[in-house]
Length: 154
Image 1: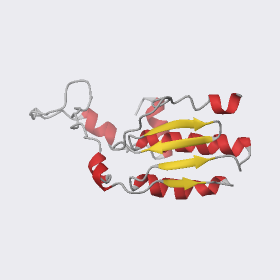
Image 2: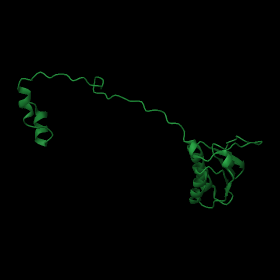
Image 3: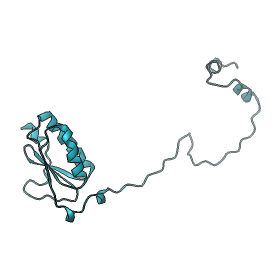
Image 4: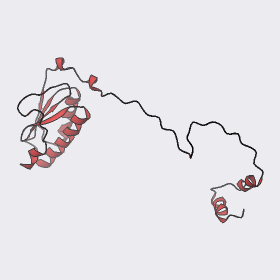
């Protein structure tokens, strides 16, 4: 045990004392087992299959017979919006009764919700937004406009 680093490791319990004895003994030939890992200690990477969007869980367009209108007063009212939108119900959000900071926060939440469920969020008027699921087509003059930030800069 002439290596001071080795002595320190043994003292701290990070290495075994008999390790040096194993180094002094002649090594028996080791047979190489074929491994699937590439050289230099790197692990193999297996590509995962791509997932298809789960749009099938949403109600088909033929069964849509409801549109929910919500007048939230606090941010906690976002739960009602999320539950309805997940079930495939289009939601109209009227933010006229909310403070501007809570309204921004709720629109950020609704934007993430619509993005995560492959839907759309559209501004109808200054403080009114429409969340439409993927199976709902919206037509009209301003259909497709998603300038959500413009509602709060005016």
